[in-house]
Amino acid sequence: MLTVNQSNSFAQQNNAYAASLMRSTASSPSPHSVCKCGAMHPSESIDRTKPQAETKVELEDEIPNNKFGRLIEDLKKSLGPDKGLSSEDIDVEKIKEMMELYESDELEWGKYALNDPSRSYTRNGVIDLNGNANLLILVWNPTKSSAIHDHANAHCCMKILKGTLKESLYDFPEKVGNELVPKKETLLHCEDVGYISDDIGLHKISNPLDNEVSVSLHLYTPPYASLYGCSMYEAGNGKRHHVDMSKYYSYQGKLINPKDSSAC
Ligand SMILES: [Fe+2]
Image 1 (spheres, rainbow, N blue to C red):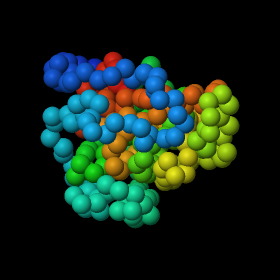
Image 2 (cartoon, rainbow, N blue to C red):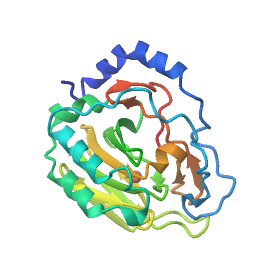
Image 3 (cartoon, helix red, strand yellow):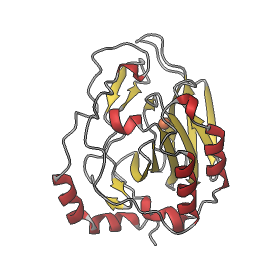
């Protein structure tokens, strides 16, 4: 079983496999193209009529036979084929409770937690849940942060699997030009579960630890960000940019985008 530190050697071993997958993957827009709209509302303006890139990786989704696998099964049942597609349709508290009940065990989730040390954080796809949600494991390098971002009108539940993360919460900017100032900062420790949606605001996630990676499990429902992208906001002036989030670094523990995986 792989640990986070071992995952890079695992990744290198899979380069040939990844190269063959990349040849069959459709191209995607520039990950940081400036939004022409310029308006400050969240992601309603994103075209959801077609995915921005090929997001379904042709790998069979396997569920491990351990406690992490049972969490996946429970989430899958809860987000059955008819649920999770609208804000009214999902029981966020139930999802959070399931994630809280899972006791983090790196021997169980470590195979999914690949890390690219050249990036602030690495997005690894774990599984697609009935097409209604996706489950990701993010690995955060020491002292690094995401951009300030929205959640594409989806729910995001996040459990800390290892280390500590800081969430900085912001209001959506009313106009371009003003510096974004956090309205709340929260430290989330191992086993804690957080939640955000665009109704709450924007956030930025940081790893405050000097020497250790932190790892988090994210459930997004609906999976709009992976399908259509989300928006990031410049801290200095609130300017909004559309970001392609379709390319996982790995999927089901196998490296698929070693050079151009998505992040914001
Ligand atoms: Fe987020």
